[in-house]
Image 1 (tube, protein in one colour):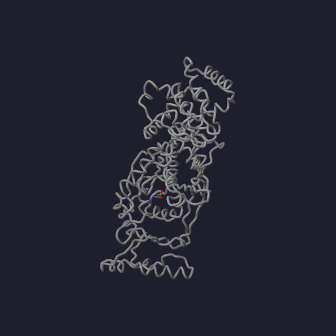
Image 2 (cartoon, rainbow, N blue to C red):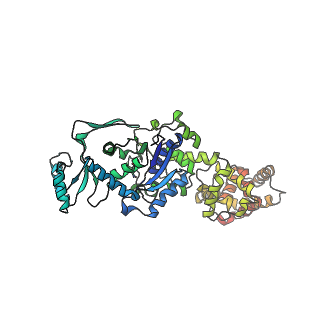
Image 3 (cartoon, protein in one colour):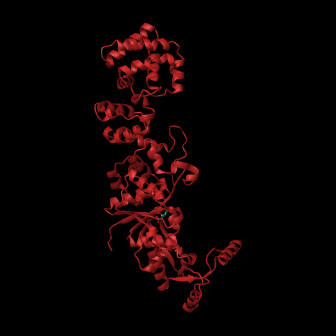
Length: 492
Ligand code: GLU
């Protein structure tokens, strides 16, 4: 036994990494890293129907993308079922558990009766006091049985201090003799989870609030086996703004970490965002590097009350929590460009917009263009979407922008091609001259310069807003600017 901090993330396989699960994983990981401890991954796959390779891969991919690395595992709970059965046997042998031969129908009937009488729905202990001979006789007669914990029947209680929820006391008399092994030999989750935590020397169980109800029963198992009891920290849930649990049924793909990957979020921005859910940071700081976050992380900062993840947001632009967007925009705009390039590259490749010269002779142009564009962007996908005209001649113009900045001014049909001719006659393509040419064209044609400028932007980028005007022209380049200005009449 060592006292080294050891924590685990123990998801049940679902095919994807749930954002709430990711948050649990992140808190465990931060705690392990902060304490130079060990973080292990255990897939709780004993519910055989729901487990398959694919269901597990989604979780591994999600963690990998987020950069949440584990030191051990993945372990698979299903590989340890014999050990769980053995533990049930030990509990039986040392008198902390007993065989229960009650039939399901009988138990259901009693439960129904209790419900009607508004009595507690607890097992009534019919088999608790069978003598060894009686029980062995029934067993020898081939009667199926479950194994139940023999919860002490005294005035005592299970008392523990949850790091988040504080002192919690559950009287023995309020804990039923719960089943730990089914009659078909299948261990119950509550047993498997505890035995795995004992074997893995878990020192701190950091998990969702739903685990709190199980904790007193689990502590009884620890006690009965003489195993050291870990610390517990239960995390409040992240709920949607209507206070509903974030679920696939309600929120579709927005429950899954890979949705955020595909939508253009940066992994660390997502970790940063999720780590702020239900955890108060000193000085309300919002942006943390990995080192900073590890340094200041403390389980004590976790809030008891539920926190809100605004997955419902339905604005086409901000389709999820606005805070996630603002944190992502922060990283997108402030990291060295070279650090965002791999993500942009991947996204451009996916959209057929990547050109090998961006790694070669056009690398400087590519970096400068990303630098220019990112000032207004929130997502990696914005480069191939809002920024498409900078990277391809095959782009669409926003109909609203065309309506407002082009179609309203019939004269643009002639003015912009005229401007194209004048730009073509320039030597080179430099800011001051470009400005002069545009100004002069406006004067000669007797048109307000603003109308020309808005028209130019819309024709060459398809958008009514974007980066600085001259920088934009320089990034698109002389030839493409001229070519696009000449397309103006086609828009009418
Ligand atoms: N497998 C459980 C779940 O996915 C985790 C319980 C625990 O961490 O103890 O909810």
